[in-house]
Image (cartoon, rainbow, N blue to C red; front, side):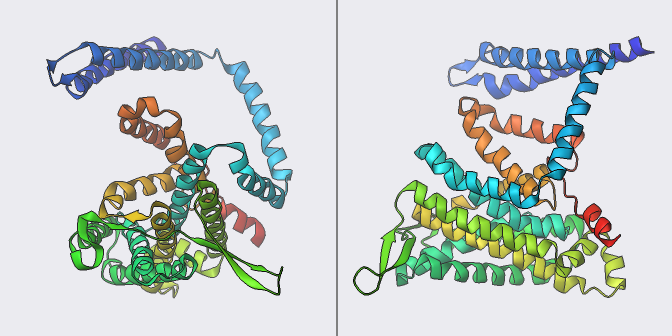
Amino acid sequence: MTTQESRKRWTSFGIGLIWLLIILWPLLGIKPEGLEFASTFSVWIRLAVAGLCIMIVFELNRAGIFDSVKKTGSSVKGVTQRAYAATPNWLLICVGLAFAIAFPAMTGRYGHDVACNVLIYVCLGLGLNIVVGLAGLLDLGYIAFYGVGAYTYALLSIHYGISFWLCLPVAGLLAAIAGCIIGYPTLRMRGDYLAIVTLGFGEIVRLILNNWMELTNGPNGLMGVKRPGLYWLDFANGWSIEHLWVKKVWMFYYVILFIAICTIIAVYRLNYSRIGRAWEAIREDETAAELMGVNTFLLKLLAYASGAVFAGFAGSFFAARMRFVSPESFTFLESAMVLAMVVLGGMGSIPGVMLGALALIALPEAFREFDTYRMLVFGGVMTLMMLVRPKGLWPAKRVGRRSEEAE
């Protein structure tokens, strides 16, 4: 029986390689001068060799070759888990914060730029985590609130010269209002219908930004957005307020790091509050939560607006950093990317979302030479993750912790 199963697996593997070659040929072989096979075969043979190695390791594992290695790995894993459990949380947080503060001194301009992108998506992912991970609402138009925040700061900065730090709460407030306006009619739906409607409203916001020429300048976008400023008191001669424009990338890094830390603290407090427990109850069983007296619609609307606030913060920083905003920056692909971070990292998990942002934003930068195959690899990795770790890279452990505290 084992031999027959192995033969079936190898047969399926061979058929899969043939199908992969058939799919890759039109994708990679079509050139301006005609259809060629060499480039397709070059890519296919690499994938075939990689797949063959994986299959060999899998078969050896099934045969019990790696049992001793597994035992050693299990003991090492147990020691690591015990050491992690014995380490105080505050110590881990201090180490992580110290590394984040010292990071600009370890890298150059390129590293600072990538870190800024990662932290922007951390803010976006944590905001969407409230909607998807805690309240269980599938939102496919989340990036619209990112655009609202970006255009809010851009318009206030260009036309009125208002400071970035004054515009930051305004951007979050307007994004929350937009979330309430969009969420009021849509959150009465559930499941797939909610996902489709949020996708539609997200596209509506993008089309408004693209066609409202008088306000947003349409597809041409808005240029000349002011940079953030840093202020401090100078007591050298009496006292005065000094001002410094943020121009260098490492300075932008510290601005978005501050915003990200505030976002993490706020989401953590919401996560372990009574509102967070109500969101979890709605996620697990909305009907049961409603029968227990939870105002499900109001709390879902609150989750939607709360997530929009953090997207507005991230959008205002994006506008200040780029000094230019256009509707092309707020497409459905961005919403899908943020949602993938939440799912990949672990829904409801703050460290998981941060890990997902690192995996999907920072790692592709290390493999820029394979940029052509980025989406292919991305789809394969997501599929593999759903099979191997369906709860994400860092699953949320909130329920277990609560039960232990209750005991």
